[in-house]
View 1 (cartoon, rainbow, N blue to C red):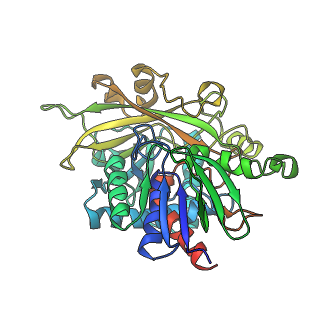
View 2 (view 1 turned 180 degrees about the vertical axis):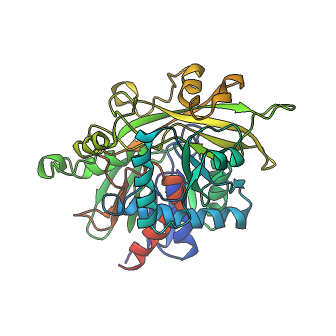
View 3 (view 1 turned 45 degrees about the vertical axis):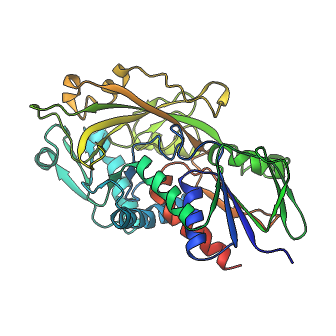
Length: 407
């Protein structure tokens, strides 16, 4: 009988978190983790993001139950992990700013979702309280979300990699899976970096942008047989800018500053500021995607001090759906224009372009797909793990390890 051996495909924060859980719980036997690039990679969605630890207030349990459950659980686990392991973290909370009556129903939906998800510390605040918390922010009213925070994602992923390696997980970087061949009692995996194929008792597909390719290689007729459940990933590029604080000025922030969460057009990436009823209708039609908005987020230096702020993400769709196209298209002016209404002082900031990364997005505002393969039970797929995947990463690892241990 073959000894238990697990391979995790994907060197991002989700793959690393699964490896951590399995190694700590001694599940899965020998554990291998394969990353297409070095870990971490500058353009990975795991690190090319704002680093916000989301509270779990945007994702409805009725339509996105995994995102709702795992973001709330992940918020707690990530905060505790950062405290335990010294990952750079700021727990300053979040302000969501409303600018007029058209914004109010959007924020009322956020409150309803927060209550539904048992995030009970979200509350309304007025102009005076906004100014007390963030003097440079501007809004007629807003929401205060104290359980939100921000981490240094590069520091987090780097530490996860070293922690996983210290627990005996073999990490293979700059490699990729060429072929997966299920057998009766194992799964044969071919890697581009190795001349021979290796057999595993379990395969975990956490390949991020490329997770759908593994799925469709195993199920080429899936769309014909399941037209209402497409699993094709479209890369949605998120671009960010940054400005650093200057001595002698009061142009600073200490916490996340968010706008009202309008949607964006998935074809153009442009934000659609439309009446709430139209927003709900277009979400149901699939012609609009949920979006938390272009926001300002504290950036920490190597000593953990807040030394600047990032602005983003501005959305764009890579030409021809190229998942490896990380080149930003927005000039600095676009970032200033995007936040000027909620942060008028931005015009005096020395804003520079920061980073860009592609998110793995499923169609129709779908929930994350985390399931056993319907035919090959030794394979588990995680598809479409976009934001808030960083927040939920440890909870996703916990969830997958529980699924495996219950077999």
